[in-house]
Image 1 (cartoon, rainbow, N blue to C red):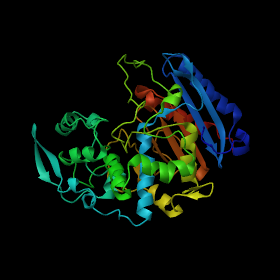
Image 2: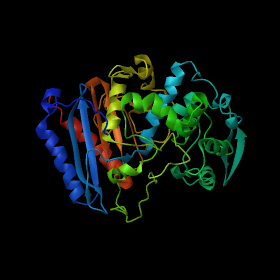
Image 3: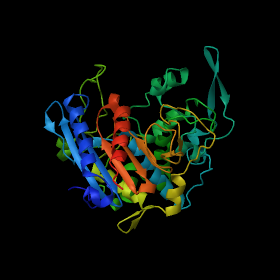
Image 4: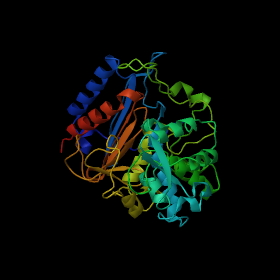
Length: 395
């Protein structure tokens, strides 16, 4: 069974140039031929129709299996927007307020401490205010990822084995509750395990597992048939793989095991998906929360989520570049210029650790998806793909 992607159109019918899209295809074929990426799937849609949907290279470089458009990819942090939508659906039901302390629902996160550097040591001081649900959704909670640095807090995260898929979501949050925050809540944008906490919040408020809630509330209604926390045995032959060693550095590449059901359903990074599936999700967002007669969110909630929630709060410029702010689950473009890639004010996007990326441009009624499994090359291809998609405009 395959997902029902948006309808297709000739590129010129939606304001794109076939000749310029051919340039994108040639660039991707050349990149595969150079050995920098094993394969890729790219999809571009505008005005509700897909004008470009291509696969390149190999799905599995070891088996020399060709890439197909229905290949299943580990999308890592592209999980976050889906889980954020699940949380905001509960928000629309009146189940919480954004300003609520998360400890109201997850008491193991009450009374957090913040690590303050004192020379070579750290001092743990009480948080100046509670971590709110808004903090979690916009990444101002003070939580981090262990791979985001080498400081004392990052080492404590590493020792707690937070990346393990063997602990439950409840155990994961309990472990986080024993660790200090990197920053005072609400003072700094710091990418981290905030959406894993949101995933646990969704479980507590829904009374069900995260996978069951996503399946019932989002994936089944949108027809996203290949999006899940693992790939069933019947579809293992569709799973996209990375080179075993990074083509630039030679270091070993290890992606998460998605061939069996994990105990920890990571709200921040656990899902697999396909281009067609994720296109359904993005079309729903571009439509203001609805698709094919199914409404998940109101138009005003989507506008709220894809507006800047940071204001003067800054931080982590490697992931949140100049010209961008952050909403609830998405980075948001604030200026037509400043950034190093084209785009429109109001564009929103995110990506995943293994190289997957997407963006939605409401002003142009466009969204685009690039799926690769090449962690070391992800930033280059994100920028290259965006440059070439905007270069393909014909109107």
